[in-house]
Length: 569
Image (cartoon, rainbow, N blue to C red):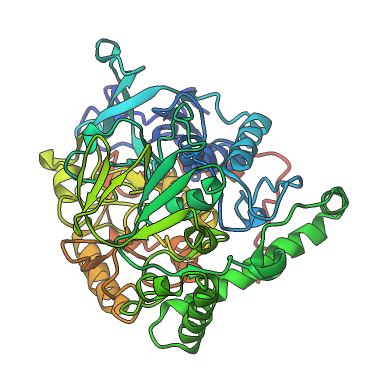
C-alpha cells in the first residue's frame, strides 16, 4: 500500500490543515472503516473529563483521537475538588455513584462523603493513567471557530498569568465543565461589609465556627447538609429561609440503615463484594432498579407523586414536632415534591428545631458589619455568615465561544439556551457539551448520564473520523421541533409549577431546563443517533470519499473472519 495511506492524495500533492488544496476531486488512498487522526480539546477534568479520557482514550480500540484536557483547578475532581464544606456528601448510594467501568469494592459507607468520592476519582485516574494529557491550573479564556480550517482555536491562560497565554488547536472542542461550577454570592446590599463570610462552594477552613453565632442563608442542598454538620459546634445558629422546600427520605433508603441513615460497610461486606463480583453487580443493579421507576413521581397527579408527597409531608411534620409552627412555612403547598431538587436531609429538620437554632423567614434587606437586617426590622448579630446560595446556572460561558459567522455562545444563551440533545448548539460546529442545557439532571445518579452522553459523542466522532467529515452542526429546524416537543411535554411534569430552582430559567422560571422523559428514555435516544438531524461538511467535497481505495480495514487484517456473512442470517 502507499506510504501516504491515511492522507488524501491530490494531483498537486498538497494537504494543508487537513483540507484539500485543490477543487479537483481525486480518490483518497484510504481504507473504508479507518479512523483518520483527530484532536479533541476538553475543558474540565472532573467526572465528565475523566470519563471522556477513559472512553475516548482507553476503551475504544485505536480511536485515533488525541486528547488534550485543560482544567482551571490545580487538581482533578471538578465539583468534588471544589466543594468541601462540612457535611458535603453525595445523596445517591455510592455503589451507583461510580463509573460502570471501574466499580469500587471498598466504599467505606453507603452514602459517600466528598473526600471519599475525590479519593475514588484519584484512584481511577491513577489506575488507568488518565491524566497524562491534562494541564492543571490552565484556564480556557476563549474559543474561536476557524471555518476554513475546520478547527477550533482555543486560548488558554496558565496559572492565571495573562502574559503566558497561548493558543491550542483541535478539530473537536468538548465542554465538560458541567453546570454547577460557577458559584455566586447572593445579591444583597452590604455583603462586602461583613468580614467572616463563607460560601459553601468555596469553603475557608481558617474561619472558626466553634462557639460562634453563625448565620446560614439558603435551604438548598448544601445548606441542608452543612447545618446539621456544624450545629453541635456553634454557639448559636440563625438560618434565613426564603422559600419552602421538600425534605425527603434518603434516596434508595431501603438498602441503608434505620430510617435511611447512612451505614458503614463492614470488612466482611467488602470482602464479599471483592470475592463475588457477580453478587456485587446484582447489588448495584438492585439499587439502580429502585431509582429508575421514580420518573413516575415527576409526572403531575400520578399515584407515585401523590404518595411521595404525602409520605414526605408526614415525615416533615414529625421531624418538626419540637417547633410545629415551622411546618406551615417549611412544607410547600403550591408546588409538588421534586419541582425543586428533592433533598434528603438527615438531621436538618432536627437541627433547625433545636434550642440552638432560630429560623427566619423574613426577607433580608441589608448586610452590615455586624450581621443581617431583615424586613421585619430585626438586626441579627453574627460572628460568621455562611452563604449556601448556589451557582450561576444560566449556562452562559464565562469566556467568548465564537462560532459560525461570529456568533457568540454567550449571546445565544443570553435569555434561554437551545441545544440539540443537550450536547450541541446550532452555529457552533464540532462543539460538544457534557451535561449541557436540558440534560436529565433530576433523574437519579448523574454518572450514568455522563456515560451515556460520552458514548453518544463517541458514536458521532466515529462517523466524523471514518467518513471524511470536516464539520457537523445540528440543523436549526431539528432544534426548533425538539423545543416544541420538550416544552409541550414538560407541562405535564412537576417542574411546571411556581418553585424557585436551578432546574428553570427565565424571569418567572418559565424555561424548564430538563430532559422531557425518563433516564432510560434519554439513554435510548442518545445511543441511537439520528444522523439526519445534522448538517455535514465533507473534507474532500464528496460525501463518498470515505469509500477510499476500494478496500476495507478488514481486507488488510490478518487472522480475522473474512467470511463473517456466511451463516449470519
